Image 1 (cartoon, rainbow, N blue to C red):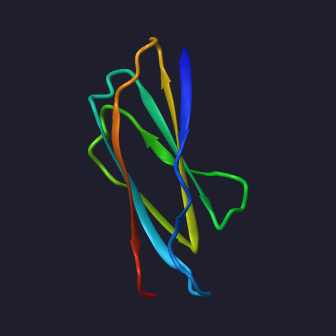
Image 2: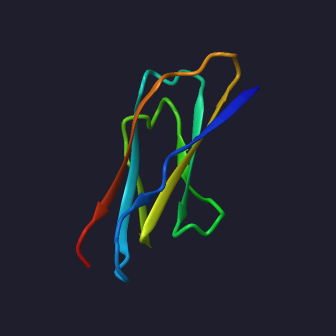
Image 3: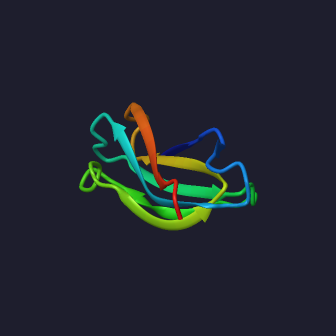
Amino acid sequence: VTSGYFTSQKYELAKYSEKRLVRGIAITADPLGSTTITVEYDTDDSGSFTSGGTITSSNQDEILYLTVRAKVFQTKLTLTSASNSSPKIKKVAEFCFYWN
């Protein structure tokens, strides 16, 4: 089993005291095959990541739905594969609402 991870930059969702509602994460990637992607997120520089779900070839085109409020949001993807190959991750999208 081979694995590796990618951590995104920290996205500032709100400049003042109002936290924004993050509703989901989606990825665009080459076909995953046997690769599994574990999605985690950190809010407000807490220093720890929370599980957001797992993406496999069967749900690759779906959104992982969340309900979390944050001023700062960061994503971590851990890819695990039975082989030494890994699909190309083309885009990671976080969906949030800018109103309360």
